Image (cartoon, rainbow, N blue to C red; front, top):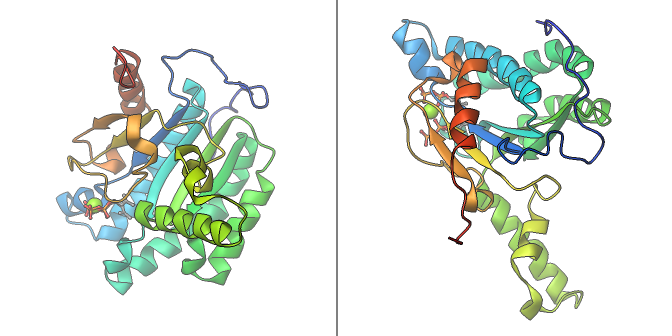
Length: 252
Ligand code: IPE
Ligand code: IPE
Ligand code: MG
């Protein structure tokens, strides 16, 4: 599927596109509810994941049009390996299919693809395709789409701790100097703006090991909508809710 019309190049390099504080610069979504969407229709779970991929397309376009700079999507958690081998293999096949069929339109629409998590675990073939997609969209500026693939926030934090410990052991840093900024800088999200808004679909009210550190002051929105039913209007409504929230960051 291609987008109906190309996204306007809304953002000058490195500059917030709208400058409007009511538009979140960085939005993350826990895309949950594919299985229940399929079950409601008497379909296999994979049909829900397929429908979920459609929702991804719509959401990326809508987020870019709204002026969101970074959209981070939780597609596969480090805990999702607990699912059946069949479901994991379906999800892997779907990622490959999405990449093969969407890369051209991602490029055309100016979407820069980035990854967090440890996608190497999906095997060298998919990992190489993902890497090529990242490379070939590197200069795109309409929106940054960060796919969280085999991502777990505690694992990410543990790795950051390891890296800092090694630096301390080598004498490159003083352990007493380790502060929030240094930890944040070791996270995979370091190069993007702070997370402003975190949305979870499907009625579950938990973070499921997603962006625990990054969500410290994010606004949270939990929706009953199942992910495959999420669309541009759902995103617009969520952005509308965000726009009227009062963010205080501990101040008054
Ligand atoms: C989210 O939908 C997709 C992934 C976690 C990969 P689920 O597959 O978790 O759907 P439910 O929660 O079972 O409905
Ligand atoms: C969170 O959904 C992970 C993704 C959406 C990729 P899950 O369905 O895996 O989360 P739990 O198991 O309900 O917490
Ligand atoms: Mg789920």
